[in-house]
Length: 237
Image 1 (tube, one colour):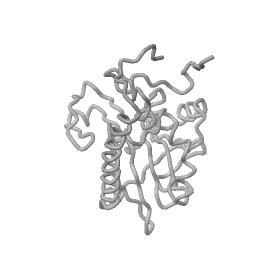
Image 2: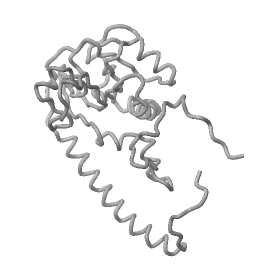
Image 3: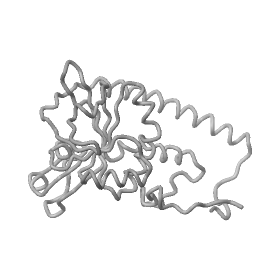
Image 4: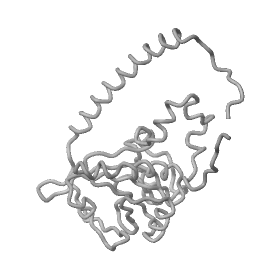
């Protein structure tokens, strides 16, 4: 709770002048985002050359099965079943997944943990979107969200640049998202993003960026995040 403000105070006229100037910058950012979206859609597609085997609560599944009859698939790579940042991302994704699915886009959350752990975690969080285990497959390693000792010793890449971690840090799991397309009976990888590339996809953070104190993280990005079931309710009487 903010007891008092040290923020500058202005008149409505002063606020309006600065808000209009900010609006112009926001419009420019929107135009730039539209340009980047077009470039993203124009990236070449890469054939998926492996038959990845997954586990779902309903049994084994292939990558093609995860499309659920649709032509596009968005995957969120969840680090593990105790990651608050991952959970906050999935909370938002779960909320609007029906809109994506209704627009020919399947959605899945994939994690290396056993499917029993993933399913139980998802149930506790109240998620309804598809939860998938990639345990035992190369999927996470191939899409640069898992690194074992050999990968780190060989000089692995993450987010399209060298990952500065030695084999003593193994195993390393990271979050990410990947997009896939299905056309002509083939599967293609079309896009992946990691680190701050995920930032804009987290609905909670985007709303916080419009709150009076912003993310209010005090130099610890995301350190305040908890699982949705761990927050204490706060009410003003």
